[in-house]
Image 1: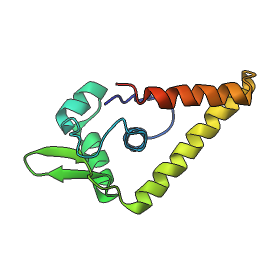
Image 2 (image 1 turned 30 degrees about the horizontal axis):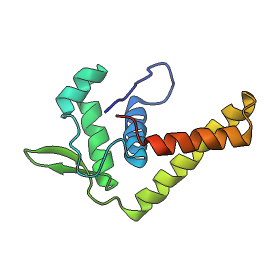
Image 3 (image 1 turned 120 degrees about the vertical axis):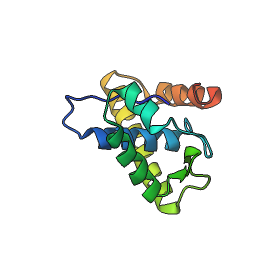
Length: 127
């Protein structure tokens, strides 16, 4: 799981981390049933307080995106709640809109952009 925290972004760190975990669940980078790093390990990797990670995991568990199993760890939920699916699709649409705007700025023609998307879909998610 790759997460990047930007302390200068103005967005609270908990929101940054939660948004990135949601996005990785939406994109399939994190699969249902997949185990997430422990609170201690992820906090050390990101150089943040353990309570920050604990709050993120608790929030995403309350949303139904994660499951915490006492003594076993934190996992991506086997079934994503329907409201969460709508949220993930909204996030996906926003990300695609950003890519389309960037493509327009770079002068990429619609056919070329479509081809790029198709190539990415054919390759599948990156490891």
